[in-house]
Image 1: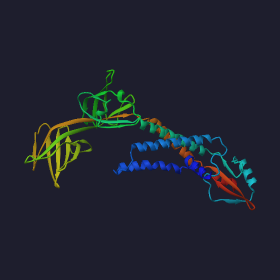
Image 2: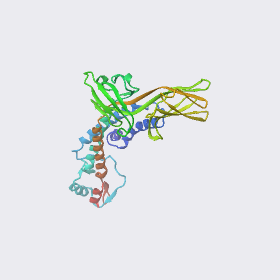
Image 3: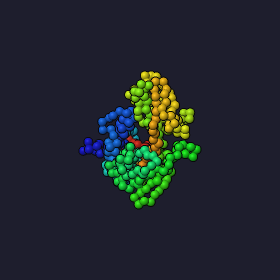
Length: 387
């Protein structure tokens, strides 16, 4: 019975037991940040961990809520201090004094406690955590996050998984049929009006009622339950590098992403590591100018190349050319999360935690002793009454 009581307290009461649910998130974060493959450390394991955590928090909330009206909430076996003091008064006198001050004692009279708002704070804390975890887990189960590169041209079906370069789906993700076709009308390079560029799109649902929008980074367009936004503009030139004896060293597309800060006139940069050379490309879209840096055998060669003007450029031992270049908008399509509920749960949990920290329990244990009683107390108010 005693072992069962300890197990019950660990699961339903002890705050230290909750720390086991931090183990899996820490492992997953370390595997991502350190780029170390840890068996089973993936999003599904993290989701399972959060679901079990949610169920435990729900059980704790029900337990604490059921005890709110009880005279004895914590119980004599929960967190009893080791230190005690001797009082000259006998146990019945001490108990009578504490009862008059609002304490409630157990049936045997050896343990008592006074109702405190801090207990309600713990209940509020678990209520907030339940909202936070339940909503977060539900959003992860219904998660949809797709990334596609698209350009001016025919409409792309957002309802097709093949349209996305990267796609993350939760096990209960909604069907893609509700997503429309998307056609890019125009792309705007970074300027004073759009510092990070912009993309004008047309969304064409099945009923044919076209919706137009201008997408900007961090400024999503709301379409039903989805957010659609442009993360950045991307250029993708096909760089061909040959030696003077016509041996091909490099022939591949290099993805050029926006620079956080311009390097001279260049606002885009990409790096590609080949088997024989490392190729870095800076790009100035306003003048279609590329600066190509070739690193091979610890030697570096730098040359400029004007797209659609220079057929090929010779520099040192190399001949460079760029026959084609893609200009893409990186579009993200994301199922909207319930952020307001997540904030609400976090705020409620924070309020409950502050209440629990600020308002401590008032509890007392009484035992007979020679010449009086032995008293073990928790809480400043309890100790003041006994002095």
